View 1 (cartoon, helix red, strand yellow):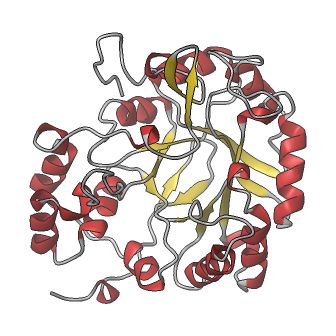
View 2 (view 1 turned 180 degrees about the vertical axis):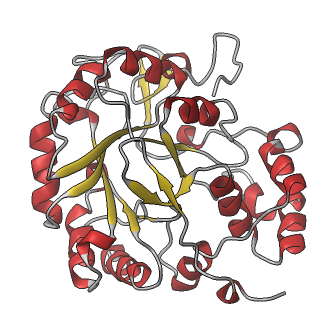
View 3 (view 1 turned 90 degrees about the horizontal axis):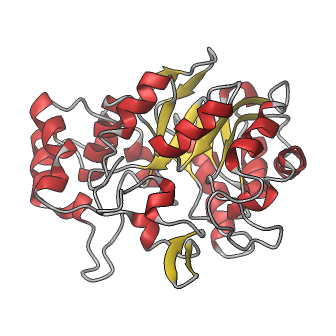
Length: 330
């Protein structure tokens, strides 16, 4: 089997609804935690990625690492105009997105932000406690404030973790259609309804956790180990990780895999072209394997509120992930 190093770097870009473009593959930074031993590894991984074909870096205020990301970008030697940088607004700043943007600009010190996203539709209190749906101010009011930020220092705005339900409400009140919607998307949560919905609205989907995650009960990740993906990887002479990333990009979805391992960074940007049979099999892997929504196991998102388990204070119905009968809507 040939090494992925022999496969050309993916240089594909997608057009956004405001005429700007975005690379199809970027580097996620969620693994870094400020002030830990991982910080230096994160900086090195960003510099390495930028010097080896990556032109998109995704981060967020909530990660607490914007200063590290900015330093890495400045130290990389890659011209700023060649890099697309995404960061995100946390719900505790919905009352003043302008101040939050200024903080990101100060912490990153890279001149401007290419994409400023609403991280979640959930409003949080100033001391970071969850509010019941829809919160005060609700996300559509916060979006109106974000619209005023578009200009020299904030090139585009978008959303993250939005569904058809929350996007419908936002679009009812919006003057600017979000450029992107960054969501959990992988073969076991494929968003087969949400992606076409966003396409129809002119909203580019970005996928986080495209490679899935280890199950808590088995310690294995089905997307990297299940026979369905292994067989497709063998067929296309690549890794199962590359299979998952290639599947998403072929759907018109931007991917932002995160890794501090340099060989994985090399591998993740060398995509392959999957045949129609493989694409169909991956898109319907939930029929034969299972459905998984990773937000239910990611630390820090779960809150027990008013006797109910929630994600940042909202139920799955509040988000529009499921109906009252438990049917997946996205």
